[in-house]
Length: 130
Image 1 (tube, rainbow, N blue to C red):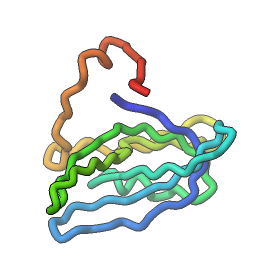
Image 2: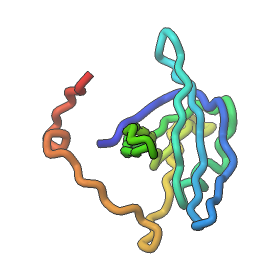
Image 3: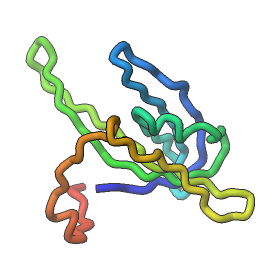
Image 4: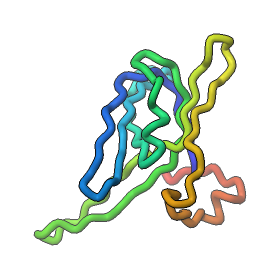
């Protein structure tokens, strides 16, 4: 599933590079349409981190993203779940008012593995479990 979030950029993080060569960059966006605005953190992974070049604080943006969760078991046996919002596209209005898409170019060597999609979501079922 993919989602869209619109808001104002609060913070553009620095590129983080790990010993394995993996890179990521974080973007914090504040919602505009809610009565109580929320700050939401998005991750831009690998070559998608470059999509944030040119994005500045106070820019109005639309972010397309997927939700990813993973399970982790602590040494004491406690199970925890971590959820990430993995962005794959960002748009901001240009001077003429038209959206200016910023999407990472496809890369065969760095492409993320395809995630299986739930058959209910591909059939247009928009019901959320909460």
